[in-house]
Length: 489
Image 1 (cartoon, rainbow, N blue to C red):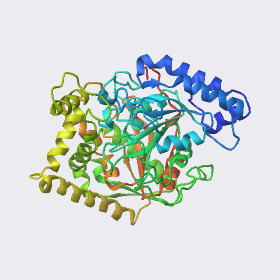
Image 2 (cartoon, one colour; image 1 turned 90 degrees about the vertical axis):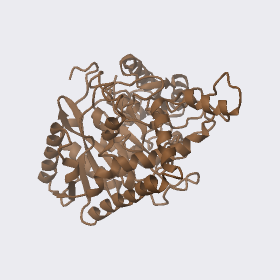
Image 3 (spheres, rainbow, N blue to C red; image 1 turned 45 degrees about the vertical axis):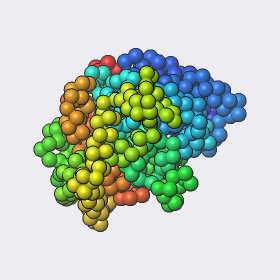
């Protein structure tokens, strides 16, 4: 069994009409996960016993007719707190951390009786673009097991792309949902900053982090997104705006006719892989054939995105991660002689190389002698980048371009050069800097590997993003192509 060529509505129909029980569906899901796990390494832990208990209870009670995700097996990225289920952020420093409460997004999903199949692998504390920075294992891309699945939500993306689940929660700080979606040929959505509560999300950079979904198709993503959005008293950055049903208009009457779409010339520069550029050019022509108007624009501050992001995000990380000190919870070093030893050895042994690198970058940027020269300047650039989006959206409904500069790269090929790894985020970090919504949808292939189209919308206008993605998906066949595990594509 796999979840290819089906959707939430169809599986829900089968559950309601007892063509399959929740228990049977859950057992088949775990069977499929275990068949792939040796090759993929997508999960840090499975939640099989509790999932089967929840499934049996729901079978006895009956699947609600009006609840699309009741009994649906879904995966959760391992930096999202799950009460009673170990949550590590893929870090040794939290190796045995057992949360005493659920993240708000998990609370919301539990009210809908979803089945939590387990916690997916990620780059440690969500810091990375390849899921190679996990303290426990490296996840592979199901399209080619020698390549990365992207990061940091690589485990969630690989599981969805392999047909193991219909959807998986991820987090996006600088592209960590969209880049894995692009590399794996699936749909990944980062909503507007403030749409979804961050309560119970292990923080990386608080003004950038946002929770979203990776799914097999656009309509499932929209359906699931509506269920986790909304104001939360625990998170003062959440918006009090009404949450619409993002999927309600995704039907045969959906159209992009009359939409004005912008393509920044900076997103199609010579730095972008030629195969990727050709895929995006084809997508542009396709939107025009569907009745949309597409124009080239300029967003001149795009080139400053990566340098500014890698000052601001590590600065926030250096503050957020100071709580892991070997005193309150988490890993504590042995053979310590004094309090300083506890701090220094626990953090030195508990954090991986990339996390320590970003802590040092952030601490330096915030230091008295560097704040004005680095952090303050990066904050000004963030404002300029936000203004770029504001100016374009005065005249256009959407912005499109490639999600990544190239398809998935080989495992180990960029780990020795942090600067090269950071440049993978060149097309995704501007969205997080501005806080606007963006989604990656399958748009074609380059050298046999998936390429994602990034669709960017105005603040709190996820509906238009979803509509454009849905129409593109329904009028192309890219989402119908699936990986043959082992790389035979």
